[in-house]
Image 1 (cartoon, helix red, strand yellow):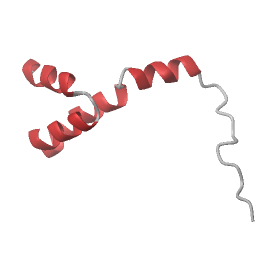
Image 2 (image 1 turned 180 degrees about the horizontal axis):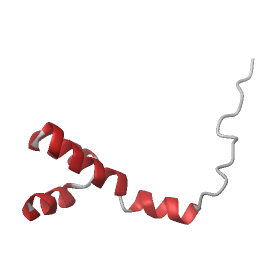
Image 3 (image 1 turned 45 degrees about the horizontal axis):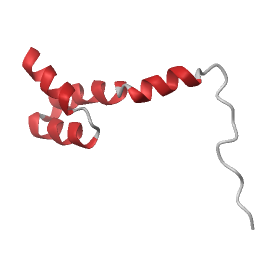
Length: 65
């Protein structure tokens, strides 16, 4: 039995360049590290930032506060 091929649907209206830039700039991770810091504290935020390569942003965020 063969499995159906996944990912066949086209994402109409999406710009490949914009999506690549969004991923490269770690926008989602930077927004989430701010939420993690607020809800779970410094240790959890440090762990998330280290895992997702946004440690510099976290330190800048804390220095600005």
